[in-house]
Length: 102
Image 1 (cartoon, rainbow, N blue to C red):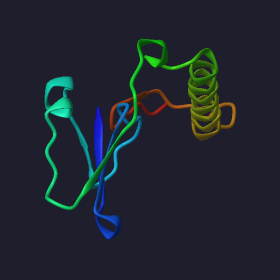
Image 2: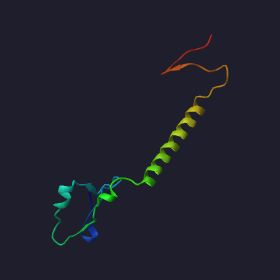
Image 3: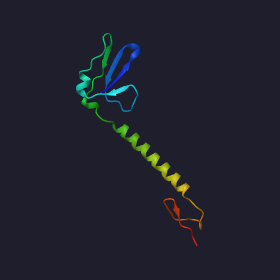
Image 4: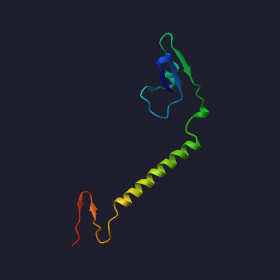
C-alpha cells in the first residue's frame, strides 16, 4: 500500500502501491497499512485493494516494451554514427589505446 498525506485538508490517503516515487509518499506493508493511525481531527481515505487489480495490464506491458525498443534503436543509431570512419582511416580501438596503421 502507498500512504500519502494532504496536509491542507488534514487527510491521509492509503491506496494501491504507487508505480512511481514521490517525495511525500510512503510504501507500507499490509499489516502497517491496516493498523494506520492518524492525528485527531484527520480523515483517512482507504482505497479498496482487490486481487484482480494486481500487476500491470497487457497495455502497460506493451507500452514498456515499446519504450525499451525505442531507446535501444536510438542507442544503436547513435553508436553507429559515432563509430563511422572514412574508409582507409578505420583504426582498431581497445579501451583508450589505438593501433596506428603502417
